[in-house]
Amino acid sequence: MEKPTAPEKAFFILNPKSGVRNNISVPDLIAQHLDTSRWTPEIVFTEYAGHAPDLARQAAADGARLVVAVGGDGTVNEVARGLKGTSAALGILPKGSGNGLARHLGIPLALPQALALLNRPTFHRIDSCAINGHPFFCTAGIGFDGLVSSVFAKSTKRGLSSYVQLVVREFRSFKAHEATVSINGRALTSEFFVVAFANASQYGNNAYIAPMANIQDGLMDVCIIRHVGVAEAIQLGYGLMTKQIAHSGLAEFHTCATVRVQSEEPQYFHADGEFIGQAKEFEVQLFPESLEVIASLGAKA
Image 1 (cartoon, helix red, strand yellow):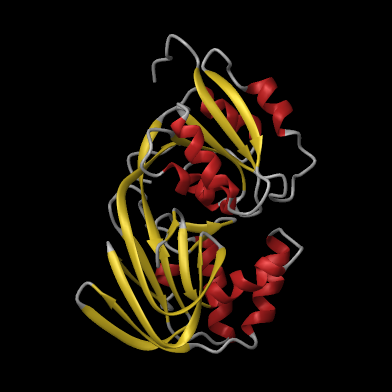
Image 2 (cartoon, one colour; image 1 turned 90 degrees about the vertical axis):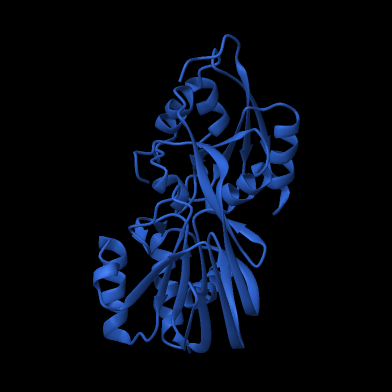
């Protein structure tokens, strides 16, 4: 991209509580690595959950060309949903424990390299989604996914090992509920372990729930996993980490722009890993090319 004749505004929104690398001084890194002939930076810290969307929206209204989420997937989600419908692009400095969207978009996890990507920006438009009106940009899920997110939200420990321990513990007592998934004119009724909605390919930490997902194709990938015992759970975990879940025999995939789920019992659900609550009815929608981002995407994301 050709550099503008004058620096444009870049607004950095930092979550001081994100991730496992809180000893890193992001303002110092920005001062050291950001090209100030390309961007004029402004830095602000979030003060409470839900603060970032307002900050992002206001930054866009004030003329920022770029608004950068500095944090994990929760922070990225908040900033991104504040930018939908604006002329500002999303940038990401990944500082979380999973960094699902950053990984899918080809953004380096090392912050100096992520800043270098902002200095030589390539702008892309990507799809976004919503589950019961709650925006998500990477993945959302119902069932065991949602239960794990609810427990993880209460945990003071972060990182992959803590997450795996939590998954193993909750798996032992989880009971799947029957639901009907209405998709592409079909009604699928069963007890579902997980119904996952993937705009991007992975949850985070390179755990690929939908390896074939394309964030720019106007379709979400729906992954349905019905019955899972201990042996199947091990196989499923292997499939997630090796991009082989589609070949495991445990999951079925559909692509669509909208899907509805109805359940007799309340189901836990999440959006981008953040626990939302419980519901018996779900509507999931995709909004094509609804967000501009700086990313490193090939012809197919």
